[in-house]
Length: 240
Ligand code: CAA
View 1: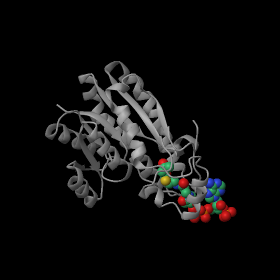
View 2: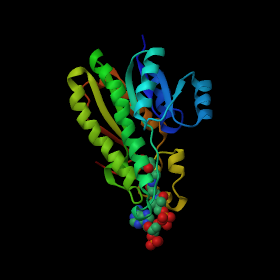
View 3: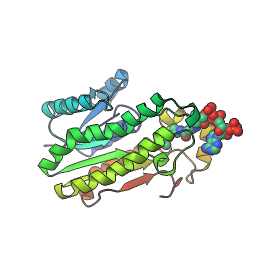
View 4: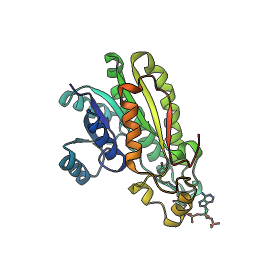
């Protein structure tokens, strides 16, 4: 029977590319999403991938949602924590709500999904958790104290949980994407983005597929000795 993989924020952008790549790799894929019903329907129409709607920043919703997926589809063997938001602004203009929402969803979501799925993986002796961090969690970014802190937290979370999963066959890794051609990056003001792209050695934004290929490798049988690592996929923008 195919292993079940869940991708948070899986109906658009990088998440959707990950869903499709994991489906190609033979997993039964479920996309989680929070808001955009039209994107979920489009994903289903194009690929047959089913979506479940809940907010990953809501602890109880994650426990309930993952229990529902396990009952209706099968035990969850792979979690890709991809869901994330930006609320950019310099610190002196950033509200507490902008700080808290980014921490709640981007970092809290990883904890909530792991709480829901890690115990079962541990019991069954196999699991893969891939957390989507960011170049901006490694290097920092002007106007992103909230996002950089949450993404940096994801990298620490990954290394800590990797140590707990290792003897149970559960690997935990992170990918740190650079600037990828998605709606999130398209929201960066044009002149700011031009300056950022000018500093990417390969000279372009990345493609969602280039992140998805890395995720598929980390989720494969071949990656069983690879845990606690961060794969930086950023066109050479930050060598870490
Ligand atoms: N370093 C130093 N100074 C900077 C700077 C930087 N990187 N970026 C902007 N500044 C300066 C500007 O030059 C400007 O200075 P002057 O007033 O002296 O000209 C000052 O800061 C204010 O800049 P803005 O006019 O842009 O200020 P703003 O308040 O309108 O906007 C901002 C600030 C929201 C942070 C805006 O600059 C912005 O959106 N920056 C992009 C942030 C970014 O890269 N976000 C990534 C989103 S995608 C993502 O996060 C995915 C991922 O994982 C990679």
